[in-house]
Length: 111
Image (cartoon, rainbow, N blue to C red):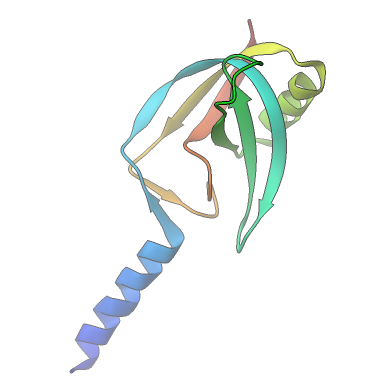
């Protein structure tokens, strides 16, 4: 096999390892923040756990990259404040931006 074949295999392996492939999404979610944590895999990302209802066992997981929004979310989590988060992502999301979340939080407001 020639070097072009191996070059393609290496590039594909990198993309499957370093890039999340998602369907683009954009929306809002209202509820409470249950946790904000730094996820320390190969790349450090910040995960936000979110519930629509505090009594529910279902919890959604989002990423946050803006330190100002992260600080707000941490404060809202401590106070159990009901908030609406705004989220959005494209088709390709590098894992160093969002490694284990469902999408990226772009803003948060108190309801």
